[in-house]
Image (cartoon, rainbow, N blue to C red; front, top):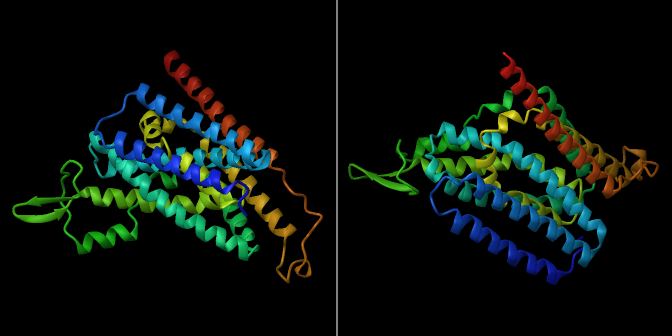
Amino acid sequence: MAETPLAFEIATFVVLALFFIVDLFVIGRRPHVPSTKECVQHIAFFVVMALIFGGCIWYFAGSKPAIEFYSGWLTEYSLSIDNLFVFVIIMSNFAVPKQIQKYVLSVGITIALIFRGCFILIGAALISRFTWVFFLFGAFLIYTAVKLVIGGDEDEEYKENGIIRALRKVIRISNEYDGEKLRTTRNGVRYWTPMLIVFLTIGTTDVMFAFDSIPAIFGLTKDPFLVFTSNVFALLGLQQLYFLLGALLDKLVYLPVGLSIVLGFIGVKLVMEALHGNTLPFINGGEGVHWVPEVPTWLSLAVIVVAIGGAALASVVKMKQLEAAKSAE
């Protein structure tokens, strides 16, 4: 299913591993609140690296997988921006000191990458054996798209999941942080610090996000290598994006609309692909519905760019209108 040369894939994994080690465990280990300049430099670096990587794919494997990568990366990056809403709420709820938030995000993102890797492997195995899974993925994405539009502010309040609630009942957890430590001693008694809960919360919350993002990326490419690298490049620089956009996330008012258009489009695309390669006996006698058109990769990229770009532009215009209205009062 892979469309890229094996040597290129191996080299890619080596470079991405170095990126993660430096980004998360060298830069990320230094407790501090990054400046706006530092955030912009890091984000710009990883965006440029993603663009260059797509160009390398184009050179080694052709235009189709390159466009699939760009489409997947933009989709995952957009979904990651939306997910920052929840990260902000988690940090606030657990009163994580600002000086160690960067480190917390580093570990949380690493956990998220491991979980997403598992989801990708499972998704690739399902798709290779059961084409009808596209129907489920497509229906779920369409449902998510509708929920994004009509769901209002229901998801803005973070609610502790069952795993975290159960954990609190079986281990001792202190009420105070002790720097970056997971374990601390209080009056001669060993406790886990709230850092453990924060790590698990961010990691398990990202698993919930993966239910949206992984089907979405498989709707754009079936190559597990492209699926994984799209996710990695979307996660790289996410901690800097968190600090850069933390105060602006509530102003991206039309981002959910843009995401709903993207997810709805990909959902419909998946259903169309499922119909085209249908094997279910109760649909067209188990034969493919060949009159259903195939959506070209360039159209997917165009829809994603227009939807997300339009949502961002509309949000900026809306923000300026509100600021102008306030200054006129």
